[in-house]
Amino acid sequence: MAIRLKEFAYAAIADAVEAGPFYAVDYDVAQGAGEFQRMRILTEKLVVPNGLEANETNVTMGVPREKHSKGFRKEITQVTWHVIISFAEEVSCEDFLETFSRRIVPAEGAPRQFNIDLESCDIINPPRNEPSQGTLLTLVVQITPAPELG
Image (cartoon, rainbow, N blue to C red):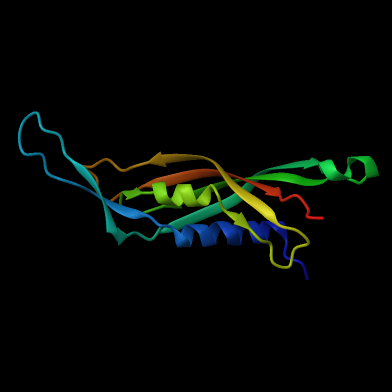
């Protein structure tokens, strides 16, 4: 039985989030008046997300370019997903975003492959005086069928 696109996409997104990496962020204490806190990324401290929500929000239908002349029926040409990732502390997500935006995922059991591309990411970091809150990432992800080989 072929895997359904929704199941495949969710699994691929979850795998990417589990792979990270997300690094803890730390701030030095300001020494005196007029001095600002210095921030550093703790690459030795990986942080695991404490929440993941992902679902499709839009589906675009069309006739794939290679099938226009053959009169084929419309099929899914793009699916937009919104992904929310939450953390218990402030994190740096640059490496994760760079890796995710280039990820091409094979669809095991599917008749073809799909490209998963990061379109945008909103980042909300916690106020420094409220460390009980953490970073919240909201991603917009586009999933498109890869061109068929042949």
